[in-house]
Amino acid sequence: MKNFNLIVLNIVLSTTIVFAGGSRQDNATPSTRGGATNFDPVGKYNPPVTISWGISTSSVQQFKKGDTYANNIWTRKFRDDLGISLTVGFSADGASLAYENQITLGIAAGDLPDVLRISNYRLFEQGALSGLWADLSTLYDQYADDWMKMIKQKYPSAFDYASVDGKLYGIPPLNDNRQFASLLWIRDDWLKNLGLKAPTTVDEMIAIARAFTFNDPDKNGKNDTYGLALHNRLVDDNFGHINGLLSAFGVPAYTHVMYYRGADGKMTYAYLDPRVKEALRILAQMYKEGLIDPEFTVKDVNKIADDIASGRVGMEYGLQWGTWWPWNGLYTASGVTAHPYPIPQQSGYSPKIGYPSNVAGGDITVISAKHKNPEVLIKMFNLYNRTVNPYMSDEVYAVYDADEQYRFAPTWINEPLETNYQPLLQAAFDKNSPQGMPTNLVSRYNQILDFAAGKNKSTDAYGLWGQYSNEGSMYIIMNNYVPNGFLIESILGAVWPQSLIDADASLQKITLQAFTEIITGIRPVDTGYDSYVRDWLRAGGQRVLNDLEKLYPAR
Image 1 (tube, rainbow, N blue to C red):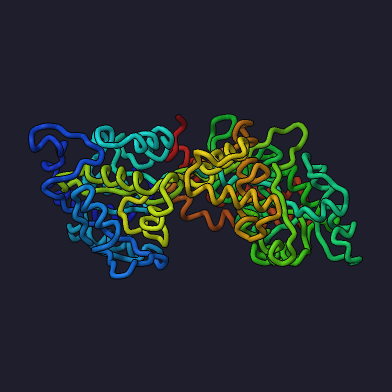
Image 2: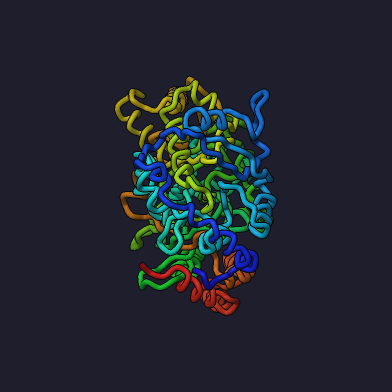
């Protein structure tokens, strides 16, 4: 990976290797320095240990009365429980480049805080290669508690992401992006009004779109509805896209980042799969019939959300949070609900549904190689998770997690909520009892049951019901897509080759223009698609594939 897109920081970092390397003599197993070895995961330091940290600030952070970055609920927790004195190295806005720029300046000046959260992978990687971050490989095995050891086994790709040349240099973000798999969302009342059942095949989906367009599904006596919603970006954004239909033909489509190894083991791009042509043929026919709004080419997702809320369209391919957005607009306006369904299948094809890489982004938390107690980072993570976790009490939640208080801990970390909550809620529904469930899930459990029984009609209850009930989107993903092997993860992580950085915008434009023109009949399907593939490869796509072969070698 070192040969690609080595950013300007190479120059800065190369000047600081002596600064970083000069402190390596302190990076020994710290708990042996006093003589006896003590690997207590939450053992208290005596005398106390001082840690400075670079704070990535956020506009949503809320200080409790009298609290500051230097003195808050978490600084006091680490001081009292672990004997760790937290000091502020610097603070900078994390939503802009200010935080990253502050790190870059600190590297150049040879003056960095002990603990940092780094979202720019190149910055992390080059810091590791230059000896700025402590090697945590052995320390992790020594000091990680049971939960920290569990996540290393559960999320191996995440820990690979935080490793350089086989050494662990940070604690990675935990992602499970299977939640981004496509589903088909349909409003319930139109199905009922027309006496239709949810589709299981592509042909049935088309028949429903036709009925929603021509059979007056809202019973207002007007020709004012469309069957299938599309937005003007087609393959991007989170609803109103065409990816679910492509997936029915075995194409693991997921936005412009969906690079993966095909059946032949070679690097490819989802929209180069020749089976895309068959899905585009269907969409072109649907457009010609009037089943798709002819104005879709000028409508973004916000306008599609408006069309859903106002009752102009009744079906769309989208992601698992549909009852939160966009179908919450329809529910708020008229009380009408929508259901998610597995993508309808096409005879002769095995569905393949793409989703983004689990290592496509997020913060890696590092500690300086100069610090004499680098294991302190792991112990802080241990304490954080023992405090904030799904089984914490309401009282603990209110103090340490609610109102964004978790952000005042340098070592906040969470497992992905959707894929971890779903099996816990499903187990409670199956046994008709929340007994043994984490405290903070009991209220969700009750809201979902009350919504299904008509006792709670709030938008929050509706959102949870559509997401986590045994009719919900996450149930479909975890109990249908996962066991059937439908899901394909993008190979494209946070590190992009320079060729992709340079060409991505133009490659997206080529894809969007070609697909739009094919659907609207400007280009014929067969020759139009074949010319698209040639144009994409010639415009830098082939070089991108070649570079990705090297950057992400087959295992």
